[in-house]
Each structure stands twice: as structure tokens, then as C-alpha cells.
Length: 82
Image (cartoon, rainbow, N blue to C red; front, side, top):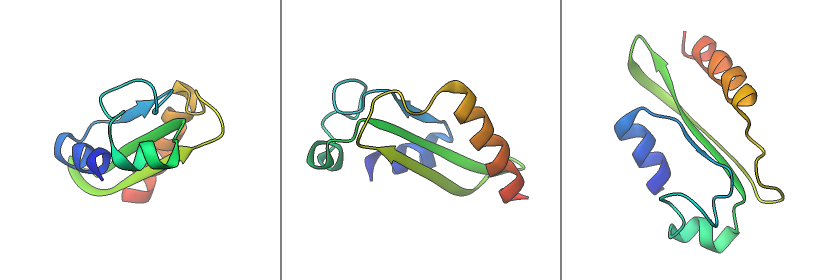
């Protein structure tokens, strides 16, 4: 919830390569409980307005969300927002 609220407030992507061990959300109860490895949370914007949020996580491997994958998701999300 804290990550989703952060993205909602800032309209910035959050990409955590190793969510359980690095970054500002390591103490998040959900991340600790579920041992989240990789995490991506991104706003879906339409004309600068937030219309949704994408939240993806992987609990099997670190580094699942590369820059290339984030770029593709942003393109798809912007099309979805329209």
C-alpha cells in the first residue's frame, strides 16, 4: 500500500531490483511478509492526470523489471489510458 500511495502522490515509477533488501520500502510489511524480490509500480497517465496504477511483483527472482520492460509497459499503459 505504501508504494501504491507513493506512486499516486508523486506520479513517478518505482522499480525495485531487490525489494526485500534495498530501497526505501524494505520495511513495508507486505514486502517483508511476501518476500518480494522484484517490484514495479508505475502510474498510468492521460494528459498528466492519473487514471490508474500498474503494480507488478516477482517473488522468485531479482532484477525482473529491466529498463526495456519498463519502457514497453509505459507505452502499453499510455495507450490504455487513452
